[in-house]
Length: 158
Image (cartoon, rainbow, N blue to C red):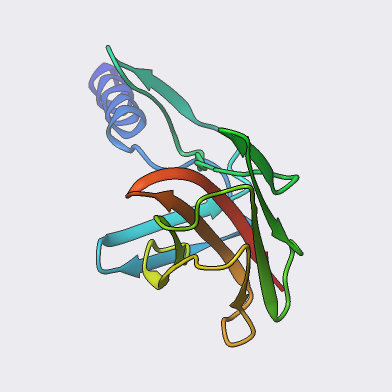
């Protein structure tokens, strides 16, 4: 009888320490894949763990977004004013650059995957960017001066 008790205890001990799995039932989630790899995500995860190192901190099991946003769409750099409107946009996005030398300014439009959708020189104080043919999503509009980034705007396309 003593051997059965010991064998049962060892079995329970191995079962408890050998099985490592996700805890909880997720209400939603999925997998996204692209040229850079594959990402699995879940929504509604309650339990997670955190690790840190000398120059990094990560919370395993929790999505960690990196956002560049300018909610007002206005930035002043060297007395230059740059506006992007309307945001959210449906058809056309207006980029307005006031008091700037337009010789070296460029715009770059990226999708969420980082794919460059459009690049062009800014030659007028007011530039229309067609967004009508793009699917509803989040986009990034980067404004550069001589290849140095001045501002990046987060654009929501309805």
